[in-house]
Image (cartoon, rainbow over all chains, first blue to last red; front, side, top):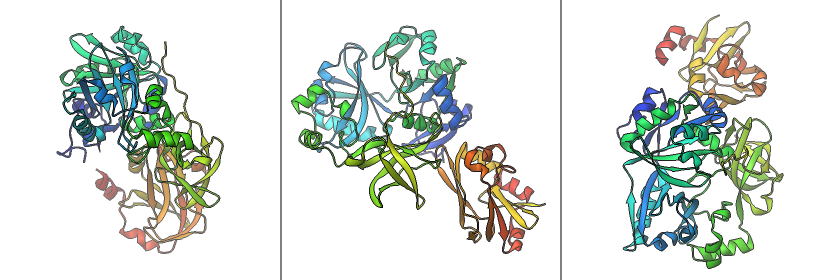
Length: 366
Length: 121
């Protein structure tokens, strides 16, 4: 299955196989789901540092009139200074979420973005169509992306590339390391401190081996990436949000820049601002099952015999030491402590709405 | 005390009047860290191949099927508190249920040690 010829390989494919990874198809790529085991990898990332191959994600630069790009997302790109990065949402004209992405200005010039693997083709096609002649999108298909995450990521980076270790959460920059041209941001998808490192494809293997040569760093697969982001309360596109969901429903209002809200100039602004005023019908919340049974995606949420929502991500949280989930419920029930029932294999199990993150964020803010 | 195996990686072993059932070391290894096991109720009658239990790893839930027909006479309650026992001792302390077999001859058609080894290699 994983050696299906139709699957694309990242520049680290050979390294994954050499490290004994179990490879699975994911978003059209053969990707490592685990090496030592999801639990051990999850715990290693929370206590030391984990290295993730996220080269399947889409990377691109945008040059030209940035207003053409800003018109499609929720960030204030005009206010994005050199070395700054923002989490933002690509919206359709109805205000539905087409993707969530990171946009940065690593140096003084062009904008750089990282988008989800499964969305990259449609995102880039949409952007190009809307940019027209005003702005140019340059896909960086010749770059790999590594994530170094965990409480020791900072000290590992300090030994490798001391200048990059000076970045604080949501800063980024271009760095040279032994002839390698790196774009590094201090961010990630685990709730831990860490970095995302964009590197030219032909140098990715060298860089990954350098990082893994540090005893604090272990390779981490997609299995632990999912349990880490779930505990951190971070959304997975296509599961916790999609084109039918607005930022208000997804509890991502914080990703709407204040200036854009005031100008009401983002896609679907009328609908989204009306939802902000009146409150949405449903909202994304954290869910803590009351017993040991994990509630997976698709699990029905019930209150008083009535279906009031659905789980969109759920599993076991190794750091929490029990099951955790996210989902959508009717807004009047979307408050921490609200008792609910989860229909797991036909049996109603007690649970409650909970605050996220389930594991505290430990970003490095300087 | 002969152990027999199914192609779905359950094992079954006659122990006195009953048969003990669990999942194989191979299955436990494939699943990864087991975090929850849903066991059937005592007294439930199952036919061979019926869904008997559910075993959940960090990532996913998988069904465990009754290797033979019979009545559930005991379940391994210890798995509720320490589901990791399924990984640590799949052939022993990590057992799932005890069955009172309605047709012990069903075991004759199942794989023995050597056949199961060949099946998983």
